[in-house]
Amino acid sequence: MHYTTAKTILSARNGMNLYRGCQHGCIYCDSRSCCYGMAHPFEDIEVKENALRLLETALQCKRQLCMIGTGSMSDPYMPLEKELGMTRQALECIEKYGFGATLHTKSDLVLRDLELLQRINSKTKAVVQMTLTTADETLCRILEPNVASTARRVAALKQLRQAGIPTVVWLCPILPFLNDTEENIRSIVGFCAEAGVKGIIHFGMGMTLREGNREYFYRQLDRHFPGMKERYIRTYSNAYELLSPAWRKLEQVFREECDRYGICRDNDKIFGWLSAFEEKTEQISLF
Ligand code: SF4
Image (cartoon, rainbow, N blue to C red):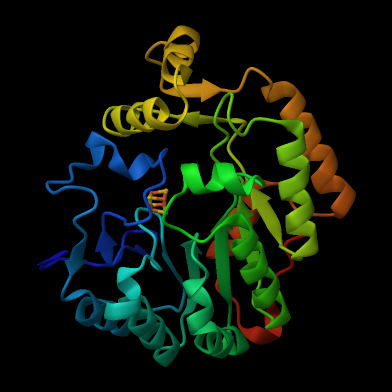
């Protein structure tokens, strides 16, 4: 871990990353890609030491209340957060100034901040977004080695719902020849139904690979699935977008299952809802 001094903290769309790099070790992580220009090893987490001061100033200067998001480039609840508590302090600041919050994580450490999320949600909206990729716990430990297992994430989603915190699931990536089965899609949508999630975001039944994450992903394939890297290269060569050969059927299953359970699967609607600031008296329906 090392510290840096940031110039700004909020993006044009009111997103923030308090940390750079991630400890969770997902083998498919796009944030490793060279295009992001990270000048330090991905596991050597960069901590923006002035992030909380910058956030407070930014929120004080905002003319209108809005949703503040975090978790797009690194997980806000990676193990380091237990020690540093920056995500928690950012949420406290968000609550203090009356903004809404949405977090994207794969960790059930988010439950530590449940009461704080409830306080934000009692005035406006606090949403937890969680990624689920596989219902197979053994595969999960390989794909996402340092993070809460799928079962623990689903348990966290249920606990969040019981506490009145709305949730959204990201079903991605779908890795060809690994988690691209009908059974997996059915199971994950079933978990989402059990946990009462508001919507499921997905970007097609596939994954992306580019310089930086491709090399890491292939090393992990060699380690855990001998021969699989060669299968990828034979099938996709150097492509950026790698659709599962079964993508049509998987899309159909996904649509049918979401519709069966009444779960929103319209990305535009879900993103629109996630970014919409709401007073508690005028909540916007997702459906
Ligand atoms: S949790 Fe997200 S940012 Fe962290 S390693 Fe996994 S995919 Fe990358």
